[in-house]
Amino acid sequence: MSFSEFVQQESFPGDTIAYVTSRVSEQSNELPPQVVVLFGATGDLARRKLLSGMMHLALSDLAPRIRVVGTSLEEMSSDEFRQMALEAIDEYSTRKVSEDQWRQFASKLTYVSQKAGPAALGEAVSLAELELGPGTKRLHYLSVPPKAALAVVEMLGAADLVKRSRIIMEKPFGTDLASAIALNAKVHETFDEDQIFRIDHFLGKEPAQNILAFRFANGLFEPIWNRNFIDHIQIDIPEKLTLDGRANFYESTGAFKDMVVTPVPGTRIHGNGTAHGARTSRDQRGKEQGIPFDASARSTKRGARPVLRLQVRTGRGAGLRHGYVRRPSM
Image (tube, rainbow, N blue to C red):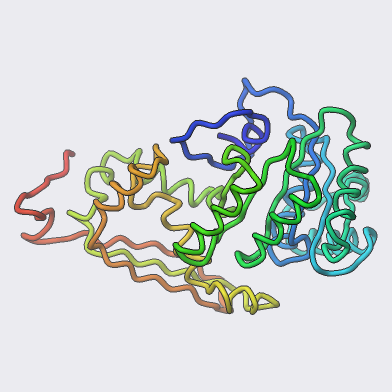
């Protein structure tokens, strides 16, 4: 399912997994006008990824009729926010834009501080909706740490911005199982399940998608990618990035949960990947119990790339579990 299809649809199948992609189905209708409320608009993820992504989306045929209302705890004017966005796009975007293209996108940007309260946010969204005309929908993008998510949801309820809306919640969703369950229950007090889209932005990247194809579409590896034949898995995630203002996030969440725990299960290294029901996910996890994971996330000045290594069992013990030998079909 594409990102634009998620925004448009009225109902959602309960046992399918949605993938964010830039491709739009040929059968999909024209995307209705959207007001994107970007929480955490001055944060690291917004500067590095989201603002440039929204700019290219707004300049494309995918979603030309959008307005972006940025909001965060920082107090700044809309002009100051546009300048920050321009500097972020110049620094981090891989695709450069002309001055005319930037002016076109800048005209779609406004900013309101969360400190101004729900009424100010609601007013900013209403003004953006007036510019876009009737039929405008709302898309709330939460690029905030788990501890701030509930306050944002409550603010959206107080600002009366729940109707005609979808909400995107970035990983990590909570900091552990208990907090994730509690957060989910609180979110459901304001939003219906078919309005909620929980994502990891890195799962839309081609390397993550390639793991799915490598895992399930490869006749050589598919039969042996399970606990009967895999001895252990090593994951090394080096990055040039340092804390750079992210200390508060990593203090509460940590690099392991941010870089390893959430993305790895999401790529379905251990499961079928075609179903998203709770029972299916649990059954697939059961097949992989007993496989040691050795994961590391580290900072480096060199341009090393992330590495995923699967060590296959060798010798007489390969494939021997529960008293039987399972042989791959070649």
